[in-house]
Amino acid sequence: AERTLGQGSTFTFTLPAKIFPEAQDPKINVLTLMPELKGNIQQAALAPPSTAKLQKTILVVDDEPHIRQLLHQELETANYHVQIAADGMDALQQIKITPPDLIVLDMMMPNINGFDLIAVLKSNPTTLGIPIVVVSVTQDEERCRGLGVDRYLGIPIFIDMLLNDIKTLLTPSLD
Image (cartoon, rainbow, N blue to C red; front, side):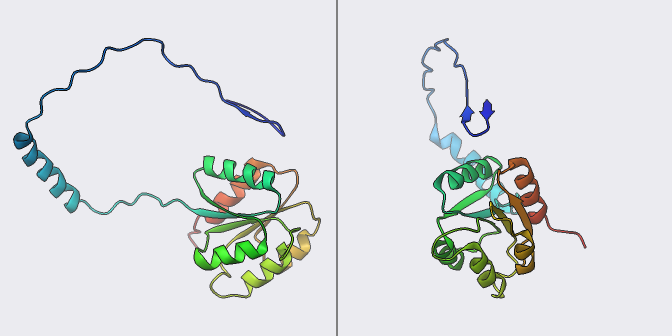
């Protein structure tokens, strides 16, 4: 894989040319298979519930389609579940239905801009604790911090920094 900033990614792969003969289906005796299947089902039922880490949800709020697409791709590649909102109003509606674990937010958008969205979210007890990472061209970091933003990143977007900040914000502290 090769990635060129501003141009995209190129993925190259090869497939084996060797052709395998078709496998023949063996005859299966269902009566002998049933006790084994029942045993597997019983073992699965007695096993403790999986402690696998659940995928974290990130809501990307940006009115620029190419930025939304870039962030969606990068965050999914980093194993996050990604929701998309084209503006603050869309984001509010989605947050009411399914609150995300973190929000990546642009500031300059139609309808409800980033500043107003932050003010609404940080004044509501149910959304107050959702971490917010601002990714924007605006040079208003101090104002964003005053509203309760957790991280502020300017444009151009440095994906490694963004992913590091997201990981830090989503990792529970041991205090």
